[in-house]
Every structure is written in C-alpha cells, then in structure tokens.
Image (cartoon, rainbow, N blue to C red; front, top):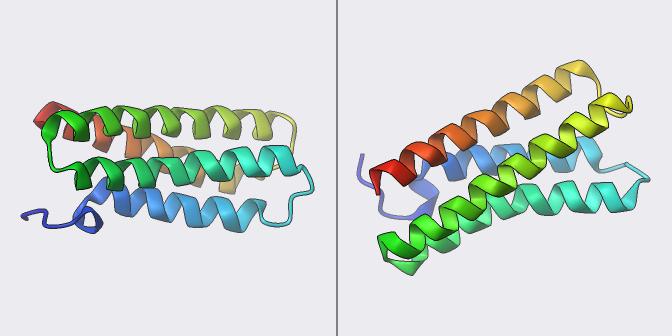
Length: 114
C-alpha cells in the first residue's frame, strides 16, 4: 500500500484510536492536571506523525516520529501511574497500554524503514 497522506499511516490510525479512548475514559476525571497531560500526550503521538509526514522529507519525518514515540512512552508511564493509584480498571488499562506499545513498535519499524 502506497502512503499518499498521513491518514494512510497505520501508526497514525492507531494513535487516533488511542486518543479517542483516552478522551473517553478520562473525560469525567476531576484530576484536571493528569487528564490534560495524558490527553495532550496522546494527541501528540498522532499530531507528530501527521506533522512529520507533511514535511515531505525523510529526515524531518524521522525526527517527528521519534517525538511521537516518546509521547507514546509518556502515555504508558501515565497509565502505569493511574493504574497503581486505582483510577483505571484493568480492562481499560490493558487496552490502552497494549495499544500504546503497538504504536511504539509500528513507529520504530517506520523509523527503520526511513
């Protein structure tokens, strides 16, 4: 499959899915600092993939992919914290954590390809 837009990139599609789930799960959270940070980190994954792709150069795209991968790690770190303090159930944790790991692996593969 030829990538003709950032929307074609599987990592971006999965990052969008992760972001939608993050917003859904933490939408009613009263811990506004945490909610804002995890939402921003998840949005950062998809936006950095999009922004990097749109630069049109492999060098810049790779740079933005590294940032997206780092944001995926940030999301996982925050998920571990919120799980340990009992603010997320195991099922939601597993789903979000595994999706973020998958996204990181896809991004790593994309970086190697470039």
